[in-house]
Amino acid sequence: MTGDGLLLPVPDDDGAPFWEYARRGELRVQACAACGVLRFPPRPCCPHCQSFDSEWRRMSGRGRIWSYVFPHPPLLPAYAEQAPYNAIVVELLDAPRIRLVGNLVTSADAPLDSVDPSRLRIGAGVKVAFHAMADGVTVPRWLLERP
Image 1: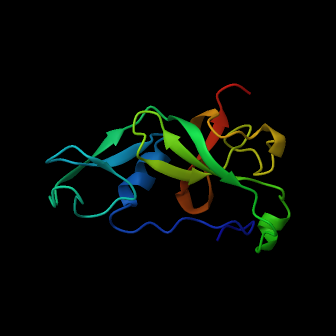
Image 2: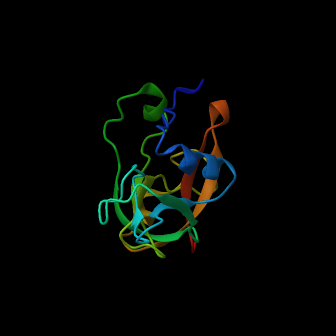
């Protein structure tokens, strides 16, 4: 948890490269080095060919809102202070089977409630932005392509 009460991701061995690339401002997804199939969340073995060889492919950072929700009521005080805020599921344009969860904001460092809830639409184009949190952790957030 950060000093302001927001939750930090807890990387595991398989997902650690995702967070390191995010810290560098890159959105990358794990791919099987044998058959080329992308997979998320990261895991040690390819579910398609069972290979343990993997690589990390850079994505364009563009996607579409696949789903969204407004948590109600937020359970942690730091999140309650920012309500109503959104949690969105983004389908990546260059990997439509890959979906990432995040928040739609007006800028990378904007509060979670910076986008008016009426602006969210399924299918709206978004692009990634990276927000530096505590302890050197950087998380992907999302901006509308047409603000």
